[in-house]
Image (cartoon, rainbow, N blue to C red; front, side, top):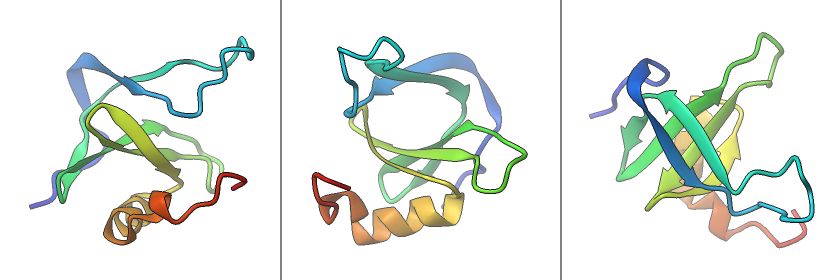
Length: 93
């Protein structure tokens, strides 16, 4: 069963940013949010960034405390899980 995405929770969660660049002062080692995740097939989907701009939202797909991929919408996040899209991405992408 899917849970609603985006409701605010009581505690802040942290998960690893695998794209962290220690030489970039704007890059963070961990992402943080207080949004309740949607659960989907053993993964957590966090609607971490909300924007009024088209495609400006950010949905993080997380498993075992690591962000695996970031998508612009909840359907894309679920599709990424269904296809394990992060495994098919080249290092250059």
